[in-house]
Image 1 (cartoon, one colour):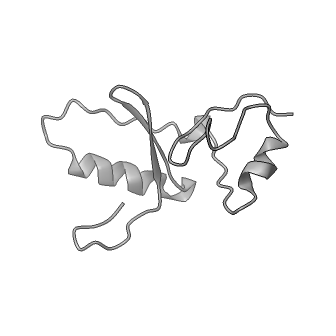
Image 2: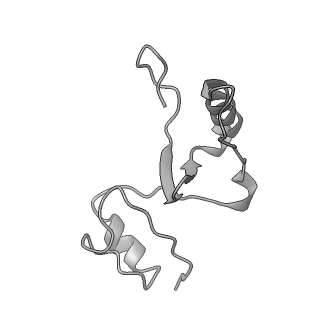
Length: 96
């Protein structure tokens, strides 16, 4: 998220779950700030609703060149670049 001057507001990821259904993943400590920022920037007549589901989910950000190899030890989900390209997401419910 950036401000009008192009400055940094928050590091977050936005995932499209379905048509008109999105999930934002951001640092937990920023949940209120993110919600307020989004609600403040919605048009007054917007049909968009914002639901804070922070207490229902967790996200672990693992980055680096060995990420696929590491995560492959934890799940049977195919994490190859062909099945899990960059800028996509997967819900992995099976943890070995």
